[in-house]
Image 1 (tube, rainbow, N blue to C red):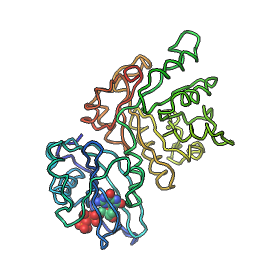
Image 2: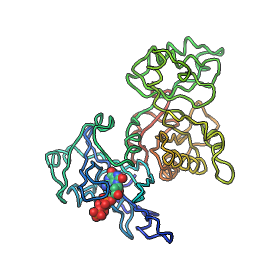
Image 3: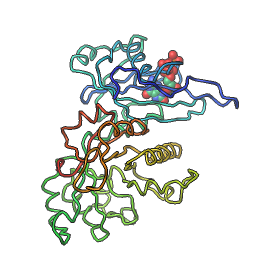
Image 4: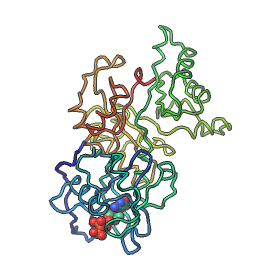
Length: 373
Ligand SMILES: Nc1nc2c([nH]c(=O)n2[C@H]2C[C@H](O)[C@@H](COP(=O)(O)OP(=O)(O)OP(=O)(O)O)O2)c(=O)[nH]1
């Protein structure tokens, strides 16, 4: 979390490269919102990527951190002072526009009710640009024409603040009891929630589909392994197609993620086989896995594939499902979260009410099993 602060950035100012390739412009981007209202500016026709909507932001100057640039740009462009707001890192991404390369450092800031009341009627920024408050669902549905790099930001913004993970089958008896598992989740999952249907048992591959059919309101994160619970690629039925559209991401375990690159950092065959139809959510426990997640995220953006939209960083605290893992605690968790180029989800011994702590420590949402169902 940054609190109107002086976080040092490793970002270097814009510089010319020796090869005459366009230099990389480092930009701080502020996704400012109040509840479901999001603030967009409009880029002047004369600017790079002109005649498009944008999030407020601008170039990071020499000797300025990303956070300092963010606070300065927001004040210069909108007159909104972010002194006491929680500024949460969403992610970092690089985009090549051909005529210009940008590296965007993206932060999410929720205004207070008072700040929103003060600014919501302002239709013009301090630099003369149009300002508009838009509804999140329309923004995410693509109703506003934004620069191409923002496609990934919109995917990040889809992540909810709370993700539920299903119980292991074994939780329902010494002999795994699929019917009890199904009934419990069918009855208890919160409506319209994002649910990571974590079924490791090959024999239970139809269970995810049954749960999604029984609960047409939920959105599912499914494992990205060979033994897909759903096989919607081969002549899907109408029901399978409808169900398939409710898969919001495929999940990579820590160990799968670590097999994505070899010892010299080249992508392995596994990386090529990952879902090309769905965004990914990965699990990380340490610096090495976050480095792999960043590499995978950057590769997928370059290849135009659905991005890595989140990283479960765990365990924050001890859990009953992984009793032998050493918990990170919020401080160490926060250091890992800061390194990730995608939104970070807190996992391990958390409850939904800990969202505020996760935000303070640099995460965007919280996940879990027993406290979340
Ligand atoms: N502000 C902003 N810039 C974006 C977004 N998405 C995106 O690709 N960009 C690109 C467009 C530009 O190439 C670059 C931002 O540079 P800029 O020209 O606005 O920076 P600045 O405000 O310092 O502008 P200036 O002083 O040069 O006029 O980042 C976005 O959502 N917001």
